[in-house]
Image (cartoon, rainbow, N blue to C red; front, side, top):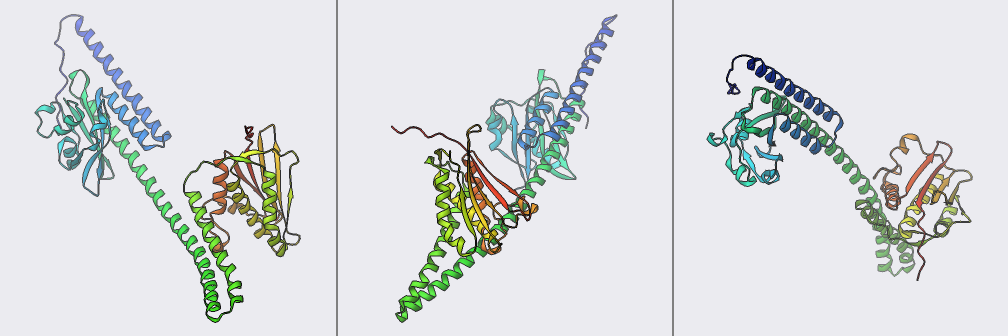
Length: 433
């Protein structure tokens, strides 16, 4: 399209002519240098900045500055609604226009989007296409503007606008070329972000499907036990066989405990929580867990023992949550070593006063954990137990420990057992009044 040329200064005689030309050449050289600098910065941003909003804001600022404009807007195309909305609007009251949506063909931006071409308006007041509602909402008076379509492989992404060139000058051919370049870069950035978001959504859906399948199988097994236990209770009650009721009741209790544990794990993992700190001691926690599991473990040929730090001080931590986390790890270790000759699980505590840390580790002499499984073992819903586990136990344990400011670490080699170590910051209890 043809554009009005820049106004030329009146010609003068003598040396003034060469001086005017020299300044014009100097100004043009400075302008070109600014453009090159801006393009260089944008190219670097495309490679370095991962956050889409930050990247687009930078592109908008660069485009506004390099053409010498007061404000800029980035307007995206909504394919579902077939209209446009303001994603970014830079200026004193740019945020105000974000509530506005434009129909295709409405305003300069709508026309630019519909016709897929750059539009230059050097006198907005006299152009019937100008959407005055945006000025009214933002309390901004548009004098002139350039709107460039953002296209990728024939697909409309949106429109990039710059408004009000400084000193009331018209936009030039050079300004338009620069803006077209920035529009292309913004389109690439947005398309890349859309692809990333689509991949993330697909991965989340796949993970959700896996999670639902895992929980469904686990709950199905629990319900099968509940159904069997309930049938025995019904039969015992109907025949007056209370011995059968007595035998069936523990089955129902175990099923209820499993469902309760599953719900608690899901709630714990689904939202952040502050640990309820209290004065406690890791030695006492280790002893309590050992007493809780040693009888059942012994029946399956697994010895559970403790190796307690003699200098373990009291510290401040959420005793209930850490008990659950450590118990889960111990239970996994017992399952892993069951059937092994000389199967042994040890709870080992330690105190490091120099590092101001306390720890409880669970060591086993089981078959160890393969490296490929170690990479996934703390992921939610990842389980090696099939339908017998939800895959939430270790994920929840790691989350609880990290909420204390500590960490849960795994060391293992195939054939050499495994070690899960919970490290916590030592928090000295306050003296009670």
